[in-house]
Length: 148
Image (cartoon, rainbow, N blue to C red; front, side, top):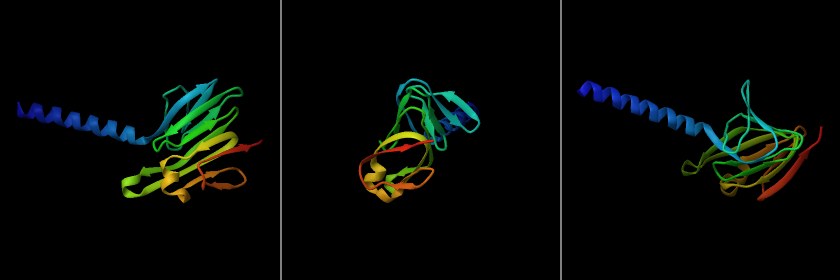
């Protein structure tokens, strides 16, 4: 009986650790969506839906008549317009350890950024890169458009 309990406990612990790791891999989620958009994770592309998780390194691509809103763990809001492609290349949100970082990249399209906790606590830890430069966040919001 003790062996059976030990196996059950080990299985529950492994499941809990896997679920915790999966939750930690998520840096945000799709809050709003109008039209078609995709989330590209590595070589896999899937249709974005409200509630879809966003993981570090994912690329988000909106269609010609689409808009999409993302909420990151620190309550940063990223609103994407039509024909937009962005990725979050670095994200660290551990305020208790003062470990904060957000590095996003917009390749094309429009992005409306609204600061979350990271930018409020450590503004210099947030950057948004474009094909021609880097935006350092010093305020609470901005809009950027990257033309083809």
